[in-house]
Length: 399
Image (spheres, rainbow, N blue to C red):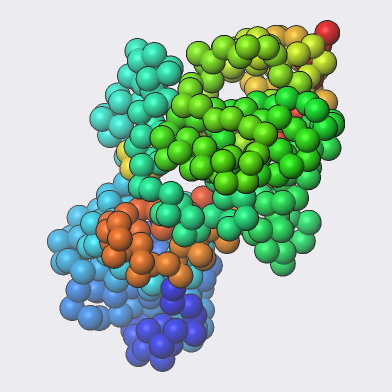
């Protein structure tokens, strides 16, 4: 990824925009977006003309460049959806500091489009929750394990927030701390049985089984089931994995503890969720839930709903989650805010992903690289700016 010191971004002679963003060339809709930016950047037209923008535009080093590759893109106004689509399609290049560039996102409208919302409402209200969950998983997780391993932590392969004690820790250190925090929060002891809802790539089994915990993992995608199954065999772990939706899962006997990392976003019906947790958990047993959160349950850009998270995906809404836990006979023992941890986690993911650009583009496609690049950097920016939050919640089933 290019940086502020990249030769593409330094020493390029460019006409500066005025403080009011006036220009005889750039269209008004683009001036409106870039003029309020607090960081210096550049806009390059298809003809090669470059315009400085943002604070310090008269002499500060540019931190990003937006390069338009087609004249017609400049002639019509754009919103977040259409600009995102143009980038994914290779019609715009985004060079330099992505977090600085994403500051422009707040200036973009998100014009209503019927189809993404119709599909979302269909999945939420008309389609069985188990089918909607399956389709969402199939859309997001079918690129193959190696794709996700190109940016996840190399030790436990978590696709949710890792927990940092210091900002300069490695992602792998933060992943292990997440497991240590979970161990203590659930009050685990050797000999206990635990259910992992959404077992991912087996990091929890790899950590907890050698410490005397009998683990059962359930997952909705086959790549996860086969990977974790091989892991259990290779390491002789005291665990099992099955392809199963949690809402229809029926254990032989209740568990001592349950954990679920980054899965609550796929289960918007908290009443059904906690009713099922009650069936699966012993009296006095605890559940550990973590995930990304938002102040409005179904708040999501139309670009994200169309390209990244389909189905009935919804962010955790903490007050609603807590209320349903209480209504179903749980005592909420711990709530921890982890937005900064998720911002750091996604920063690591985005940086690793950018370093793998050549491999990603070659093996999966340039379009796939661009789509996930927006997802990872956009998520990091949202957690930094309080557009998204993250929490973990620990609740205990009453006797």
